[in-house]
Image (cartoon, rainbow, N blue to C red):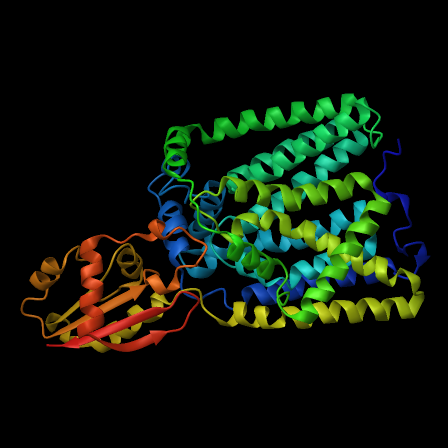
Length: 508
């Protein structure tokens, strides 16, 4: 079996055999991708924190001790522990701010661009590495999650690194590769529990390779000893993960028990997931272009490396299929960001394969045209992501505080549900109360001349159709308050962020 990676088999500057890229040009394209990626991810990085960031990161990053960070899981699985540790260190050094808390996500997002280039270069070709890294650079889905204080850019990064050393270990069976595989798999799990989808995909591929070798079906040249070393490495990673998660293991198991299986249709979710990975795919032009590139990419990847093609397909399809089969109550597109880099590698290989019949200058032009078409398809999504805020908590509170000013003794400012805690994060001169019942609200309003209500991420209208309605069930008292506000208050300010924020006002 040839144990070298494909990028090491070919000339460093080759484009499927023809020397048309110099080392300096390759470095230029990579640096340019990283710089563009940095600009796009920093464009609106100081926007207000949104729901998950306040609820699922700040609370742990600001915990009283490191032990509290690693021993708290939160509501279901809100604490992305590795990210909480990184953001804690960031605010210790830079002070508490939106930029400081999001800095680790930004860094891991940019590292993901670099490592995807390395992955493509090593296993496919230099051009595939360049194109895939650029596609990740301009991916609205990746931009969004590389500029929020959550662990999803880390999940994407460590899925690349874990997969890199998984495949390299299968090809070389070097101890160093398996050690690095263990490290990055552990970091992936500590970033987000959905790293399990990557490990399950790797196990399935290893079993397929083992069956192929044993029964002479689709032989890959991977020895049983190599596969044994993989399973030992995965077992070692699992032991370290269990050790790291041991402080929250009981809470983790209890929370799993609270996750219900539902019967709602997930077809809208699948469409939304396709939109996230391939912006513009719902249009005729986008559907045709992406379909051609994906099918071509699968074909050309299979011709180059059957092992790689099998892994890409299993990693892209198996986790989604299992999730749909189980159909748990929680489903968010961001859980599947681990598959995004590999889908983009398939697309990039499609671009390289389709343009392979052209030579030299004409080949470069064809690649530029295809990448430009993809950029045009994605531009509306990119524009929205970098210009539309997630959730304007800060702006809503600042608006109310500017209106209340010196008359705060005659004003009551309140919110409904968990969102009230989030509005309080940005409150500097105003007390925001959170009544549980309408009677409690009336008691608080005694003697007040004006009332302000802050509402966000609670309205039934914003619920995605593919999510279980019971997941967002409001308490009866809160529903009563909400209905009272809608009937009697005036909408005085609307913030059209991704999750709208409304300010209601009543003069008594």
